Length: 347
Image (tube, rainbow, N blue to C red; front, side):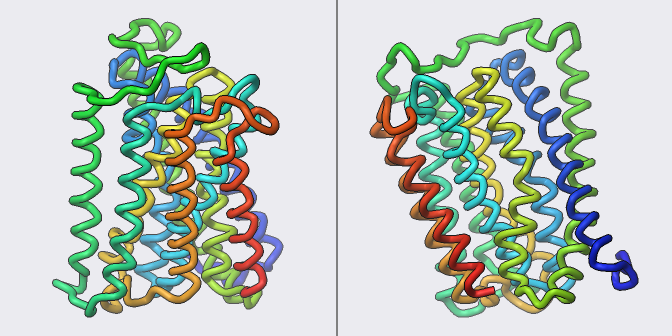
């Protein structure tokens, strides 16, 4: 779409920086609107974080993966999607360090977030299964992509149903955040709910435009620097497109919206797996899952382990630990550091 070959490398790096700033700015505003929608609609912070905030703040990343796949760069599309999930999980651990007096996973433990964690692990296993099976396609699209979409939607229905009629609830402690049982009018500080929804949509479109520009820049940077598309996607574009999650989770924790913070990351991670399904549609070289490489499989395995550790942390609910964070946050950060080191050594 854009001819970036005439630009010097310094200008390409500047484009990365400008995209990062734009994505960060839109992410903060999205967090504010999402919390108002959660409170005034009565849907709850965990569900809104997963369905609205998690999906919309992932728009720039999804557009980047789709564009890369359509441009015949499947490695960039895959590594951007999986790398973003790894980065966002690490962001939740970072946010845990900013919460004083208690562990974030203890205070924000909810049935919805537990179910979202389990759903994420199931979704991540589907691409590996598709890679292991013959390269079946229908009109160039793997059945695994449809399976990802169906499983994601079924998971959301399950989460919503569990929220309406919970058969399990976390033990309430002095620091457990309780969801409001009814809508809270006036949470928008004088602005009507419709205004916040409209602003939400506009900012989501801004993130989509940023994703296209970032994809073009990433492809050109990979070509000029010799860095593999796997490394660029896993460590550069995935982090930049995940900045809304970092900004929003830190802002939500600071504002005391703890379930929104955890729901944003976990729900956003589940949505990000759908990047692979969308990329498979745009990729015209056959099944995208057959383009998986050893490093991609390593990334998926690492993310599944991170999600499992986070799930264990939410169930164990360690109230205090070193620096008032639980074992899950420390372990997730160590895993992410090892993940980054391995990708850099292989770059």
